[in-house]
Amino acid sequence: MTYRSPLLDRTGAVAATGPDGGVAWHYGDPVAEQRALARGGAVVDQSHLGVVRLTGPDRLSWLHSITSQDVEHLAPRASTELFVLSPQGRLEHALATVDDGTSTWFVTEPDHVEPLVAWLERMKFMMRVEIEDVTAQYAALGEPVDAEGTETEPVTWRDAWPHVVGGGTRYGPPAEEHPGADRPWRLVLVPRETLADAVAEREAAGWRLAGTWASEALRVEAWRPRLAREVDDRTVPHELDWLRTAVHLHKGCYRGQETIARVHNLGRPPRRLVMLHLDGSQHVVPDAGAEVRRDGPDGKVVGTVTTVARHHELGPIALAVVKRNVPTDAELAVVGQIGAGPGDTAAQQIAVAAAQEVVVPGDGVSADRPAGRGETMRGLTPRGGDGAQSLL
Image 1 (cartoon, helix red, strand yellow):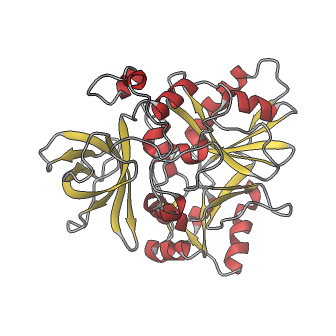
Image 2 (tube, rainbow, N blue to C red):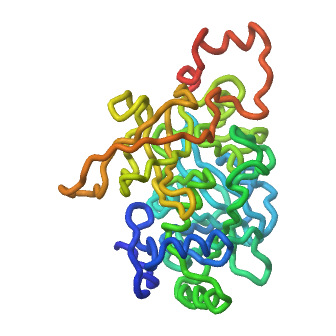
Image 3 (spheres, helix red, strand yellow):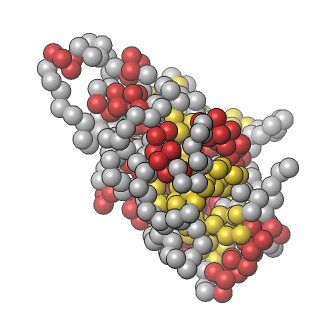
């Protein structure tokens, strides 16, 4: 059954599409909504997201052994983020995680709930853990608040981005120089039947209801990767600078750890995330999935646009994943369609110039990569190459 938020009944609401289908893209004034969110005075309907709850005395030690993050001693109401990786270290699930002292809660993309629950059930073995999809009972609201939930608040996940949490590392700038430092964000879980009341309570305090046009634009500005947008079946976390918040490099063994360690210590990620400033003179921009080409619209394809947004100050911007060896000052163009959709015969081809803003540096080296050890280190990667393909 296709989800439809009750907040889409608001006057002026325009439904979002793609991974945000079921909630509002905007409510009639996307620029004002985005400005309100940027100054900390708006709430965003995120009720389409999936919610999974774990109970049982073994839940944290079990999660610690099978995921990328150190959660064995996760304190009540302390938020974290973790990955489920493939044996080859590719990203399969990204989970906003918080424990309330009794249960561990995950918030994730709606299409990932069913496969996530199925995988967790297969991995449970004899552990004392119960796994439940509670999406039908709980809905998420997004808030521009930089605070963990308190004892008197509902279950709340606080986004630590762009800080480097314990055991993590970074490829991009330190948090104090990162554009994401100006984007506080958390998800509050409320009983689904009280969703409208929870929004009304915030509106009574002077906040505005905003759509995903606003939240996605601020996410792109903050270089914040998202599972449903920036991740494909080849993605390793290093490519997106996502070792900041979701990977502990020094914990015990877990599925995919070997690739995580090798790329960090010896190799370089094959691709890298960039933010693109798009030429807005044509008043239209290509959809996500458009090709990124070097040296103009007729040049070689070097990457793919993952998210497109219109920012209230920056204009049209996008996140894209490109080959790591694309020069950071290369002239780029984005070539794709507008109005594209299943069976849409009216879609038009468009090409726009794009200037890249570096997120993951072109050398593919993290801030704390171990120093090389002469011939021993050189022998582990192909001479003259970046070593990425041999490590993946």
